[in-house]
Length: 150
Image 1: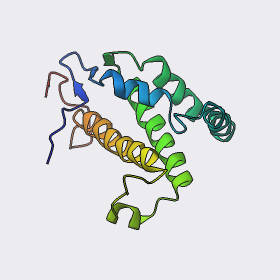
Image 2: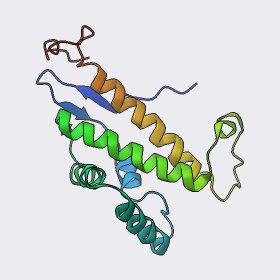
Image 3: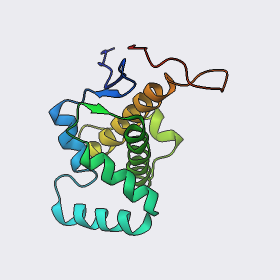
Image 4: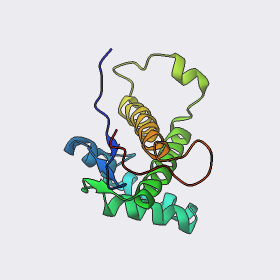
């Protein structure tokens, strides 16, 4: 199985190093209708109309920091919200169910790229959660020293 480099890493300063390759940054700029500008604009309009202000702000933070190499904890929390929202909208559009995870997506499936994006967003969401969790004190009190770089 192929090993993937971690995309997020907490630094000694307490912020987060963002290691997304250009292709992934470009991909995140254009979910869910990458090859259809009209449908992409409709998707953006519907998402923005339906989301609460907090969700919009999270998307704006993600868009504004997409080319960043470091994020604050608040920015990364916004990323978590935005990635989750994008994944939920795409999953709804694709009618994702538990069975989706058990079946192989055919190479000629017209929604193959959208499924790949859906699974990528899930993987990226996991990376964000893990990066944020590294700073949580298991006792539930004050965070541990932010001197970790791992």
